Image (tube, rainbow, N blue to C red; front, side, top):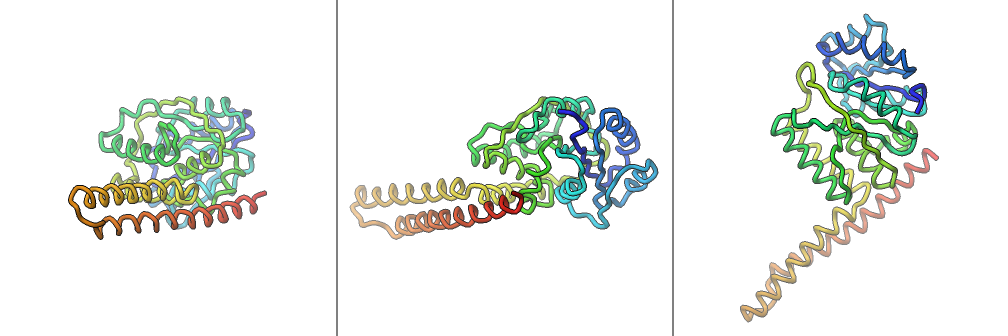
Length: 292
């Protein structure tokens, strides 16, 4: 793909240390290859905005912090090109990998930079990523290895079509990936290397990790509610039958109240899954219609 078809969006929040060296480099890179470069300053309280102003870069300010996902949404709405690519401002991504993704992308679906050297991360960060990746793979019945890479390219209209369903925080890209899987958009992974970030990470492992787990479940309930409700419902019904039969036969007693409660709970969850599935189908059809 020609880089002149791509708007490169860089969300920024308190990245003064990184931007001093990173901003001039990516500006020269974008000018050389023809990317449209857009910085979105998410209410930084350090000198990030001052650096962007000093370099006369194209940037859009948020007067208060609204979140990583909200910054991406702002950048996409202001993008003039047909395709948008996201990258972080912390100096982790190599410019040669940005160009690699642009040239490999064929304009279909989503192209994601798959980080191959995640072993450089801390043990707890790696554990969190494994748990989140496992959740998404379980719900979507896929085999993704890097669900929340910040380096990815997607068609602008695809992002805007589901913008209202995307959260304003760090799980925006993960939710976008789940929606792409749900609607059978091709996903291509391109191996990339990441470097040690400059400055302090803005992600709180436990708080943001818990929120991300909740939002992944919400995204799956939106995209495919039955994939969430049916396994849980089936588990309740199976356990109730097994427990009820065991007590009734082995112990010579009637069906216990606990088994009935488990069975009824399973039926209720199944009914809720059907209702949520219909609501999800209606909401997603409205989102599609608004963009068609």
